[in-house]
Image: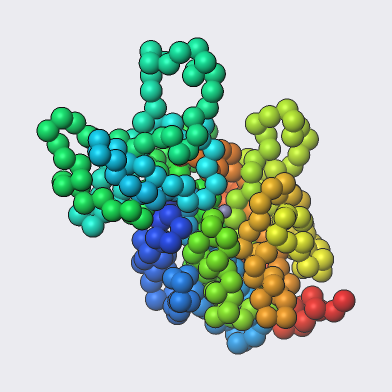
Length: 357
Ligand SMILES: [Zn+2]
């Protein structure tokens, strides 16, 4: 594994569901060390600041640190854990998957229980269970009192467990939480490179909190950064797995996505065209993408104060919002290169031209 792959492994294997992102913030700081100054908003978003050759313009680049997961609702009398979803889950994606519960007594291993076909009649086999019918098994057995032994409390976070692995196609990486640790990694790698460069602005690389439950940290972090221009870094869904989306450009290995439309943000037109020109000029592989459902931190930052020219920059990922998702190395590298070049080009004059309508 090269340095980036080792960083990716750490970043995707640590636990950080919405509201519990501290391990992710700590990892960013330990990787970037003293290359940046650090600030926080009051919800827990981490802001890594690097001044180039000028205080202004202020450029905000945000990747949300949180992943989707669950919280404990209650421990049943039989010693199983009832849970609630945090973020958007489809029940089919979670059956028989491994999870970790963080309790006051430590980390508890569990599995989302799913019955074998032997115990189902034909009718049951044809239906999908509902989330609220599922239980997590933490090793309950006769003679073992789960409640007394494990110290599990309502509200304790529950996180998917998946190991980072490199596939036979060495550019394909399999991991949990690519949504959105890949955005955090793009932010951190860009900040690392900017620290050694003379960019004509001040860069604010942000790890936001609680995106998956309502784009929350983006709002509060923007109040700290007061950006003149903003980028949301996130995954988009890869459209290369079904024939329904044949011909769409959002594909693994197709470069960085310059996202032209989603439900939360229609990008500033001048910024959009600037990013397309920039990618063409620097021969960075890219596509113009659309997120058909959902939004990003960009939708919130764009509305802070009197409005901020914003755009969402993406890496396509297959199977997000499950335990196992995929990201392609070339797309990641293209995204970092595009963000570095954007910071090198966004001087005061260029940024003020984005606000002429
Ligand atoms: Zn996301």
